[in-house]
Image (tube, rainbow, N blue to C red):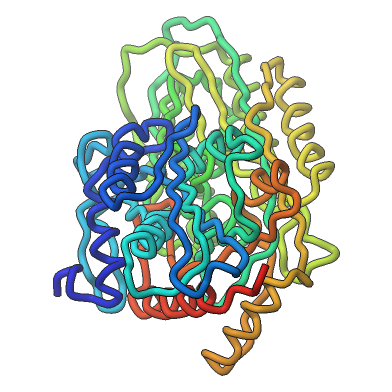
Length: 480
């Protein structure tokens, strides 16, 4: 079945057009031009602000002029992840999609449904001629996935809407009214290198699920950086380890799926035998949640230089000590992760070390408690630490008028109550709300699985449900 033949056809048509445009985070020039042209071709007032956010305004349909005005908001950028065996350039190629039963997915890459389905939905409302709605402002932000710079750069006074509907939630039975804030923690150091003295060993970790570093952090998925750290640590007592290179993980907001480490030891065979025992234990630990996990430990060769045994020990101990995963569960909201950290990327090349982390929390003081723990560990090892890209969480307001309306409409329409929740992910509502404190905000969306990984897929029946729900919401927005 072609994508253009599934319902709602208007959304999948626009999603296909959007996914033909490359849109990596921080490289959104092409998609900004695409959305700007889309609005202008419809004859709607269209502006691009100084950071690259696109705002398109559409007047209320007949009879809806007295209703509260709405901001429909989604982000233009997407997480770019692919399997190692896939040849794909996110900067020049459009996403290659296919249908698998009730799901739309991509061929070996992220799909971009996060947040492309939200963008396509807003496009569909803007070009519609038969959907009742109040006055609309469509806000398409940039760089949500790697810095929230679009939301952070949105100035007061650019929007006049009274209610913001963020279309970036990934469970269709959830109404999201709060989210976590975050801060990037970057650890760096430069080491002298020299010719290695021992025998070369290579460890490869692959086949992990990966996933969203906020929404999936509590699921116990494996992290290639942590697994490599465990295997390297196992040899510290009996081997003179000299690290040559580490290349593991990727984006801060994705749980690392694969990585490699190259190093020298005094006795390669002894190291491999001992590490293989730990490998067996790790595979057993993750057998249920990571059935595809593969760990290869083997002799290798390299002409590259290594860092010293002493410096290597500091790096390995740091990888072993950095907190990864859930730090604290919320005492106030059942089953909500309050604070966590994702050790996202470890790169050692030519003596240059970089470790990227993304720390999240719905409580600002808790966020910095985790970040400061990471800083303490790294500084004890003589490394440099920088905090950057901090953004606030979004405090829930469960009694707001729009939340009550959506709960009522959902229950009447689907004969069950929705889950009104806060999520452990970075939504832009908290940042936007700082400049628009009087604006009511809600986030919802269709069901998406495996976001931020090549397993990302969007549920077709859920998109139909979401589209129908959104149209009902717009038709029932209260009076000003």
